[in-house]
Amino acid sequence: MVEPRSNAILASDAPASTVKFAHESERDFAAILDFYQIRWEYEPRSFPLRWDADGRLIESFTPDFYLVDQDLYIELTTLKQSLVTKKNRKVRELRALYPEIRIKLLYRRDFQKLMAKYGLKASG
Image 1 (cartoon, rainbow, N blue to C red):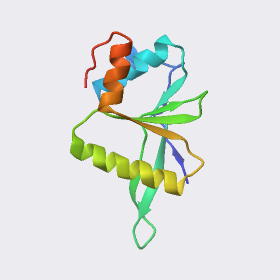
Image 2 (cartoon, helix red, strand yellow):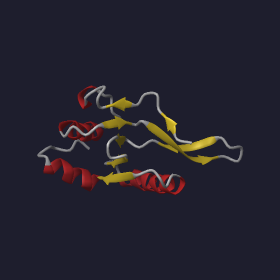
Image 3 (cartoon, rainbow, N blue to C red):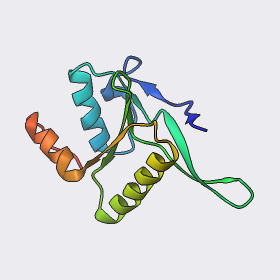
């Protein structure tokens, strides 16, 4: 079951400049989305990934962004390599459990290229 998050933020509700992001790179990405008027939600859903023997949830994954009109989740990975491996695993598990969900993982190099393309300095 995909769980909606009560603290989901819609771009139409608040511009990137007013949202509390977990990482500054997320703010930069949201600003680009806002500039191009791409509707987004910040961390709108958590996807259960693993359960213990008693059926209790022990791991879930909450992608950073949902692009509403594209029906696409975006996860930014601008942190150190050890965390990239963990995110790659979670994305693979999400795809296996929820094949109908579209998700794109943006690596640090992808993010830096995107920021350079728009003449911005990447924060992460």
